[in-house]
Length: 328
Image (tube, rainbow, N blue to C red; front, side, top):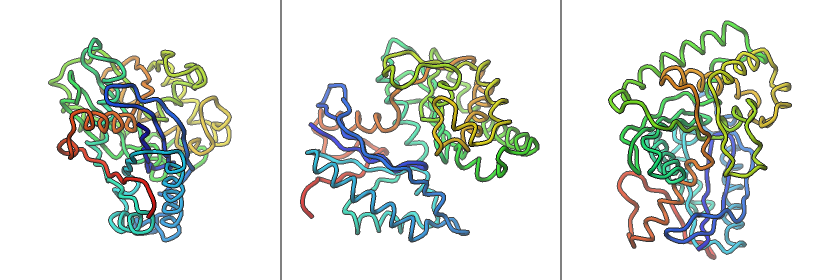
C-alpha cells in the first residue's frame, strides 16, 4: 500500500509517500516539499495573512495532485504549532478543506510528543528499556519518556527554535545580553516541566529527533545524511556547549556555511542549540542518540496499526485527518 503523509510544519510543508503494509517497515517512495515559514505571514494580531493562506492552499493542492499521480491509496494530513497557535487557525483549516479538499488534523503539543515517542520506540525496540525523547520544532519543544509503546509522560513547551529567534534574538549576530536573557528564560521554562519526569527515574536511552538535533549533531561531527539512516549519530553535551558559543558569535550567513545547516534554518540554529544545551543540563544528560524517525513516521506507523487491527476509527486522542484520493 502507498500512503501519503502531508506535514504542515513551521518551516516547511512536506509530503512523503511511503510503501508499506501492516507489520512492515515503511519505505520512502517519493517526497515533495517546499520551504514555507507560515510565521512570516503572521500579522500584528498573530493571524495568517491571506497571502500566506494562498501559499499554503497552493502547495496542498500540488501535494494532493502529486500523491494522486504517484498512485497513493491513502492520504494523511496534519499540522502542528504553526496553525495551532495562529489567531485564525480554524479559519485556515476550513479554507484548506474548502479549496483543496483536504482535512488537516490539528495535533496538540502532547500528541506530537506521544506520536514521536512511538516512532522512536519502534526504531530502537523493546530491548532499549526506558527512553527519553526530545524534539525541537519551529514553534515548540516536545519531551516524552516511558517504558512502553507510548510514553508515560509527554509534555510540550513553547521553546521552538523559530519562535525563540523571533521573540528573543533580533540581532544577526545577536547581542550577548539577548542571548543571556534567552538562556535564562529557556532554563526557567524547562525546569517547570522537567519535574513531571522525576518519578520515572533515569532513562536507559536519550534520543533526539527533529531537523534541529540532526543539524547540531552534524555540526559536531556526526555522519552526513548521505551515509544512510543506519549509521549511529550522537550528540554530546561537551560538543554542544562548544558549538553553542561559536554559533552565538556567528552571523546567519556564516552559519549557513556549516555542514548540516541550511540557509532557511541558519538564523534559528543558535536558539535550537540553546534549548538543546539547557535540556541536557536539566535532565542531567551527557549524550544522546539521533533517531532518524520522528512525528511523521509515528503517524504512519499508527495508521498501519489501525489497518492491521481493522479499526474504523483512530485510537483515542491521537487522530489525523485523511482523505481518499481521486477526482473531486
